Length: 165
Image (cartoon, rainbow, N blue to C red; front, side):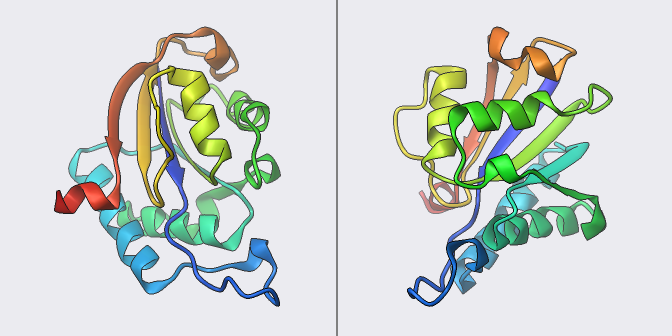
């Protein structure tokens, strides 16, 4: 069995026309949210074997908060370019390329691709993935390349606004 955790990057700033989209960084609220969401995984004893991110600065920065929470060095973050401005197919391809030695992976990417992917994977996610939202499933397979052919078992959906509800 494999565990997949999908994370939309935390709230970002630097929306001016002079900044490239890929270079946008987290804003203060995004940094707080990333740290808090990482703590939720830690408290629930969900420890990913693999941290995979879009090359966008805001996605990598979000991932670094999770790595820090788990006491893992930044050099362990793997980058996959198909996770930037992702398509459903691109996200599947990134996940299918994960080594089968890995039993649990966390993927940091962007909207609208992450929402479309989760809808395609689970068929039960009718709204947009919020900033720094986490969606996790178990996959009844030992082979990441079979993700498109397995029925996932929902584990959780967490997001920063849920903490204050």
